[in-house]
Image 1 (cartoon, rainbow, N blue to C red):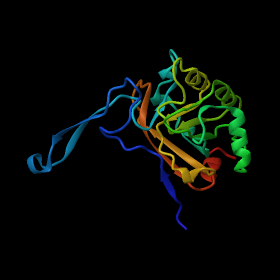
Image 2 (image 1 turned 180 degrees about the horizontal axis):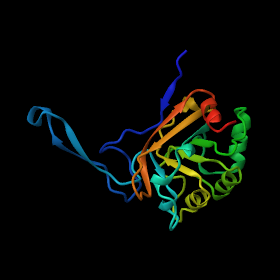
Image 3 (image 1 turned 120 degrees about the horizontal axis):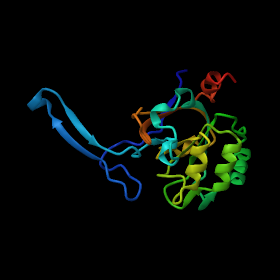
Amino acid sequence: MPLRIVDLTQPLGPETRVYPGDPPVRVETIAEIGRDGYYNRVLHIHEHVGTHVDAPAHMIEGGATIDSIEPTRLVAPAIVMDLSNACGAVTSREILMALRLRRLPLPREGWYLLLRIGGGCRSISVEAAEWMVRQKLGGLGVDAASPDGPPYSVHRILLSSGVVIVENLHIPGWLDGEKVTVIVAPLPVRGGSGAPARVYALLDGGRLGEWLRGE
């Protein structure tokens, strides 16, 4: 049976949602097949548009830029959970209860949590971010434009501890309770504070990610 792969990436175009205050995506056609013999367009985007990865430099003075993140940190086992059926900040207690309810293992060092929290009234609490750091998680992915708002304490806690943040994921509800291998592929923008990324979930029970980590 072929391995199933789920694309967790939001399409990129003028309709792509952006963080409040950020410029929208603009697309300009500069060549057409009928006129030029080929088709080409210019994308006007910023580093944190669509599905993207935040580098430490986004919030930490002198932090690592997106082109310096090691590829080994971007492929890992991941736990997917849908926590969008409530409001307020997600706590570590809620995460642990959701893991037990779904009979999922506690994420180990280097693993990712992919959380469906919606684009509305949910966020990640500072306490949960501190718990993720203690667990030595490799990354946090959310389907929202950001896991928190000003003063961005969650960002600073995670990024200063080397936890990768992936934002604006497309996480189907039916992935709730799955353990997968996540592949995160940001553009290696030189000196970038972040970059758009293609993100995939392999429905392999996390085996590839574990094998790559020597587990």
